[in-house]
Length: 128
Image 1 (cartoon, helix red, strand yellow):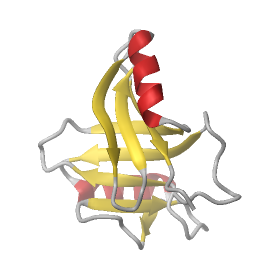
Image 2 (cartoon, rainbow, N blue to C red; image 1 turned 180 degrees about the horizontal axis):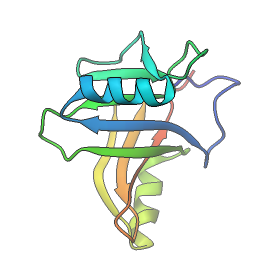
Image 3 (cartoon, helix red, strand yellow; image 1 turned 90 degrees about the horizontal axis):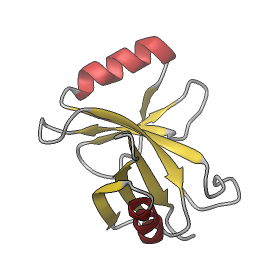
């Protein structure tokens, strides 16, 4: 995700992540079901970017969990301040599962639970 004029507005769902201990099976399943495919440019080993048919940019990704994290599928919401959203979520009865992390490329993200136990994520794209 880049921070440019086509970047989604804060408060919108702009990414998905599928965490799995069997990334090959996930790539095959979602590829066969929706036509999603691996897009070049993975940010790190153990993470595959996925794109929609007819698009050359990533719309989501597959995190290889290696069994160390529960399998999951989450939507990711763009926010201006990841730490502030984490604090507000806790005040509203949510829980922070993965506290804010900033990647070497400048992307900041966190994973949370809502009051019903649904997992979701928030992120701030790197500055331009």
